[in-house]
Length: 557
Image (cartoon, rainbow, N blue to C red; front, top):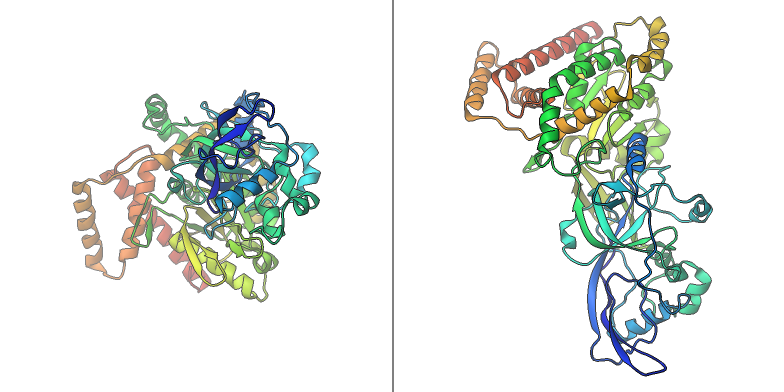
């Protein structure tokens, strides 16, 4: 977000021929009309806030294609407002600055630079095209659009907000309705030659670098004057835009099929995970996990899964990620090679020269699936950057927070990111649950077996069922009755009677998380006795496997 911007909310113009005066509104415009009477007593200065928004980082191709396929909307230029001149309109802004003694140009505050947004264009959840026009690609090459993830495509946008801007938070996913402004006059400051002739460096409060960052050409970074916006709980195009409770018909039909779809997905994941049904069960639980609340500093609901014992042949981890990518709306693959860890910028960092926060790869929207491939990590030395990146990943996993670097201090921002770690041995990163993979396929047959994975998934309609299932299970509300709570407490006491060391408070917490996710995976919104017993059984199998692996290998599981 930039500093607040002051503009002429109401101003008076004078017709040069008739000398007639007329009051005009400056709201929802970037360029004022010509003939402004700067001595008018009727001038009213107003304030607005500017957010720098980008396409949702890591949004998967199937999501983009679904939205693009359903939209009928096209951007149509407004005919209601045509400025008398466009080339030198910033001179008027300079005069207004002198009059109000307030700089109108945008300056970056020390809060974060972007609220991730998808560019919807009407009330039916139909979004704009997300690819920048090819004719603009060359022009954009010199412009740093400050996307969190490398290689991202699509338009960024300056969203101008006129009220209640405190209700939007960093990295929110927004649906914005507004008036699009792409006036050529807005590109004047992007041209250094024009900028130097328009602005007196002695009077301008921004450096040339700040001007370049805060006033990019409108043809590449359009301005959108917000009329209405709402924060979205998800970006799955197969779900209603409204909350699940409002779409009661959709919810009831989906819940009735949850158990059968879960069985199909479990079978599919068992095949993908080389015949390991228990690993498939835990992968489902991981993919529907979600931070539903925070108690003091503890995020409740997170379920980071460390899948160890992963084969390193046939690019197995990349194939596993590609399968997950086909099922979740947003995801990102991070191969943890030594070179990447020592070079990548995971946490956002303040650039005091350009006066903006430079985004980092962990600046992701809620419910993004982050796949960490630790099998890529080779022997070698982590430098200072690498150590900071590993620490940042550890903090993300443990506390669901990302540190933002302001040079002189750090600020923590909460996040809600699903982290899956694929590793050969136990991960060097923390996790909520570790499960060692037990392939039922001989190593020599893995390549042939993997070749048939996509054939196993028969149709796109089945894919869509899985996509709806995972998103709905994540969004469902959940509760535990007092009766079940008491029963779980008594059960915990009984488990510790024989051997107090066998079950710790941490084990109880994990079992409760597993029980919650098991119930939600079946479409049940409250914990049942049966759900609790199933969670105990699943955890017993997992812990038994980890003990066996520990005994065989003679090291920590």
